[in-house]
Length: 245
Image 1 (spheres, rainbow, N blue to C red):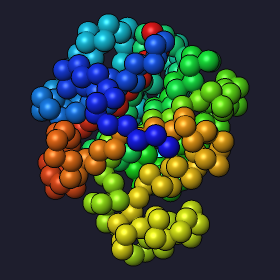
Image 2 (cartoon, one colour):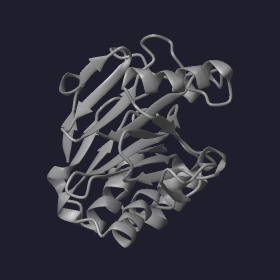
Image 3 (tube, rainbow, N blue to C red):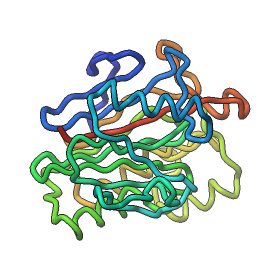
């Protein structure tokens, strides 16, 4: 795995932009106090502003429900924003697909050879149910992507330093993942990233094609981010997205 820092990204307003040439992937921050909550007029306006900021045709997202449901988007899918799910795949050009987070893990999958992208919202339920691996499987089944040419980017989320779970949930994760307890947990503090990394590696993603932006939404001090736990519920939403040029 390659650890990324903010210095590896280009700053555009309150967005961290990673340009791969034909594809761009973006993680929002809270530096301008701009929230992307699809359930508020303010949030919808901010989502719409992405179209202008990045010269896009549209920005697309799901009604997230902490599931492992995955959708493939094309321009004929008119009501996609009403669908309940937590991962989107597309080959459409000039259309951003994205996910909302405020402690959960945003994951962006990119295959430049096939010109295809996916975005994933992976909370503890999605992580437990291996939504990243399931998204990769769907991409392989539907588009025959080359695993060796596929890159995965893990964005800012609440990390092992700050994410305490119940003893019951801890036991479930240890039993399900079979990851060494000392690696997966510090006491009852869970690393969702370790679970995701295990799934990616077992799927066959090359170690040097896995990237992680090493920011914790809960305790990061140099970059302002939204955190559900830190704000005790009164929080904004980050929006992580990708598009094909």
